[in-house]
Image 1: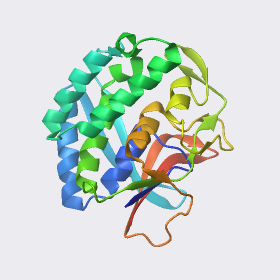
Image 2: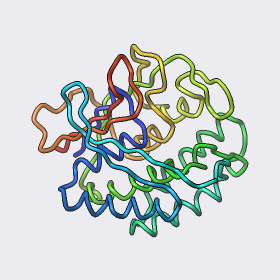
Image 3: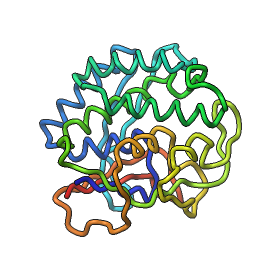
Length: 242
């Protein structure tokens, strides 16, 4: 079992970093190499960094995108691009395809449009698709089919207002609110977006149940750091392997 502690939020890069943190060094190096190569093919750079914040050590991910692509992707375009990345990573892709479909379904409900008419601006950046494909890759190696389950804590979403590609939006954003249906979540004490669409869609695809009984002595533990600070702390998600 993998327990996801999302009490400080969840994003695609945080979750991918934490999942890579559960790998043995050789396995992590192999995944890192494949992710970096796929990024280079798209004029982007993938960086996996060891970080320490507040006395806690973990991993963080950054992307440096040198491509000129900045437009939003349709469902067909995003599906084709993600399938290509999955093939390059050597991943079968069912989980990443599920995450992508959940994202477009949520945006479809939020905008009152058919899924085929929705364009996601964040997917115009290489990092967003790489996070989805990377989560699919790492989950396929961490989880044994029909044997392992993923349990998640209550999710902290953040609160207030953020500026998105289509203007100011309340937190959680409309699409995230749809993704959170049926999942326990709280706004938390600090403003800002702590649960992103990609991170929430990934949990939606992975999680079978929720519990706030945080494992005391897991077999392995990893921290995935984000790039934003809330209350003086970097955002983070913690994984426990039971």
